[in-house]
Length: 211
Image 1 (tube, rainbow, N blue to C red):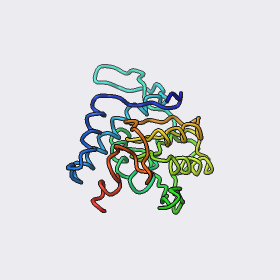
Image 2 (image 1 turned 90 degrees about the vertical axis):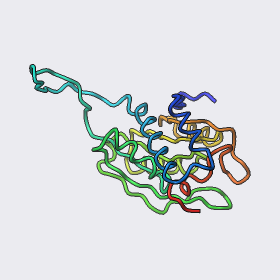
Image 3 (image 1 turned 180 degrees about the vertical axis):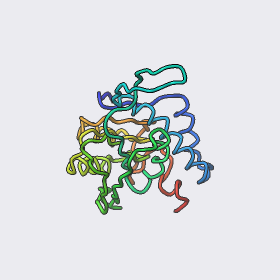
Image 4 (image 1 turned 180 degrees about the horizontal axis):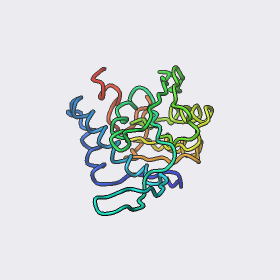
């Protein structure tokens, strides 16, 4: 699968931590920390193209012009609820980022998403928006969330996930070719219940310790 707007983040640290996530014996506390660490590692790559401007700074030696991030800050938008687990990792990189929320639930029969909540920081159109969700399965939730952000004026949008199925990645890449997609690992397929295989189970349940 080769799309110009997809980057598989194959750094050894990310791959090692994803393998730990997959383990059924990884408990809630460790799982939560791993999600945060992987989000931070992927976020480092996703924020590579932030614009810079030279500003004047006085060092202990002299005054100089030195680069700092220009323009409006970042907006992080997790898809509830599992996306919440990735927010703190990106905030560690950009503590002043604003955080919005999009709530979608998946119909158990059709596997299609339905919206129940949307709150975005303003002015959203001037921000670099990072939409996060650990799992990209059918791609329905991600596509709908990004469409929702665009309808509110969002322009500069990126999407980050930890595990993706080929079916969902294809759908998202083709539906939103203007959105850069960052993936930790591309898994084999979806099963008949639209779960990613081999996957890591239900990310939300494992982050929050629910069943």
